[in-house]
Image 1: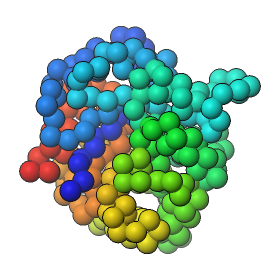
Image 2: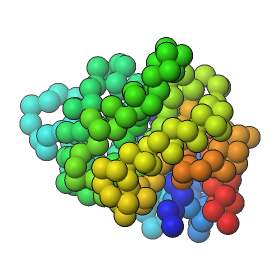
Image 3: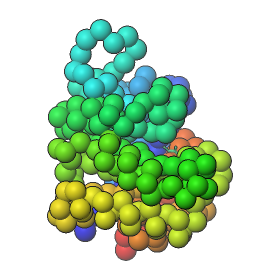
Length: 251
Ligand code: 13P
C-alpha cells in the first residue's frame, strides 16, 4: 500500500512572513491521513524545519548539487539540506531543466548524492506541448526516467513527479486519461527496471495546476499517489483542501 504524498513546491516565492502559512498548515493537519511536504526556497528551509519539528509536516529543498562540498558559488549540497532540516528534495524540475539547462545525467548525479544523504528524492519528468503534439510524450518520459533515476533508487528514496510542462502554472490540467496513461507507463518502466517490489512501491505524483477544485478527480486516477503543487501550495487555505482530497482518496 503506497502512502499518499501531498507536496508543495513554493518555487522562488516566500519571505519570512510566509512561514505563517506553514504554521497554519501544521495546525490544520495534526494527524494527516497522508504525508504532507512543503519545499520552501532555500533561505527558509532551516526556519521552516524548526517550525515544523515534531509535526506531521515535512520540509524539503528544491534542488541540490551533485557534490558534497567545494567551490560552487551559489549552490547547496544534499548534506546542507539535511543539515538545515530537510528530509526531501525536488530534482530535475522542468523550470531547472529550462532555466539552468539541467540534463538527465546531471539530475541523476544530484539524485545519487541526495539518496546518499538519505533525502527522499522527487525526480520530475514531463513533456512540452510540442512533444505531446508530435506524439512523443511516452518516448520523452521514458528517456527522462532512464536518464535521471540512479540505480540506487528504492521505493523509499524515490518519488517520481509527472509534470507536463504545458500544465505548469497555466491553469490547464491534463485530462485524467492523459495522466493515467503516463502514470501507468511510468509504473511499468519502474517495475521493469527495478523489479515489481521496488517498482510498485515508488510513489508517483502528478503536478500541473492542481487545485482544491480538481484534486479529487486527479487522485482517482490509477497510479496517482499524490501531487506536486506549485501556486496552490503557497497558502494553507489553498493547499489544505488538496491534502484533504488526498486523505479522502486513500479511504
Ligand atoms: P503549478 O501547481 O503552479 O501549476 O506548478 C506545478 C509545479 O511545477 C510544481 O512543481
